[in-house]
Amino acid sequence: MLHYFGSVMGLKTQLITVMRKFSGQSTAYHVRGSRLSDYGQDSVSSFHRDQTTKDTLSTCAKLFSQVPNNEPAIAAECMDHLVAGVDTTGDAMCTLMWRISTPEYAYVQDLLFEELSTIKDSFDPVRQTAPIAVLDKLPYLDAVIYESMRWRPPVPMTLFRVVPPTGAVISGQAMPPGTTVGCQAYSLHRVEDVFPNPDVFDPKRWLTNDAAQLTAMRAHFWAFSSGGRMCLGHNLAMVEIKLIIAAVYMYYTTRVTAGVTEESMRMDDQLTSGVPHALTCPLEFVAR
Image (cartoon, rainbow, N blue to C red):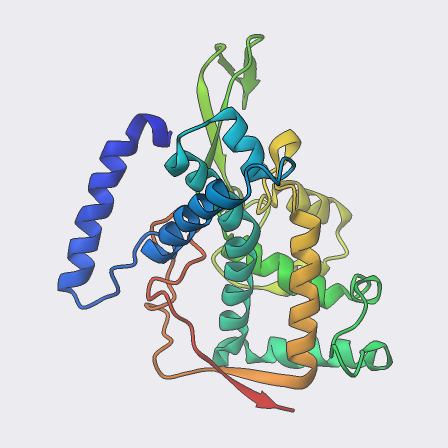
């Protein structure tokens, strides 16, 4: 879609940048702004200069063999990998920690601490977290993470697919071959028959004893997409989030600071909309 609407999207970004500048907001609008772009292009230029004869296995090396003399395109591809593998996980944790740091949801921290305290002997005194095999057995930790990514998926936008040559039937509608279709986590996560009161952050919904309801929720949970092109790193992302959330809330409580508001943390109009509108989320950490 970027290929077809690149110029329109570029114009939109420029207009939003101007609007943000005049309103006194950061102009680093698109995800992490120009710093990420500069980093990607500088890294690819450096690789092309110093490593192309030494490295033949990395993604960057393979791209240079397939798309020679096009550093901007290769930088864009590498940046996509960086955003997908790093930013999305960070954005998920940012949203989770912000939500449970607000007064309304501070009780979630207490419940997490109670559950984590049941495995306190498993916490490493140096790493200050527990083995993932132990953390995987904690239902409330699991519920908080699932609910956070349901309520505010890091990538909520439409992910496009093309109907194969055989055609397809989607929701009872026949789709001819070559048709561009799409689905988005934001909409799936707000199907009210599956997630009652979908706009409410409610971890306990994942602790239901209703097996059919839980199956339906897991089927509609689309934070990592699904199928052959789902997120390759979804298991790694869950490990990272569990290790860090356990380490934080076993030893600390967190509170929002004065500048963190519902408005500053609202979803921004970007592919990775887990990015706070204000592009910042300072929290206060208090040792237990």
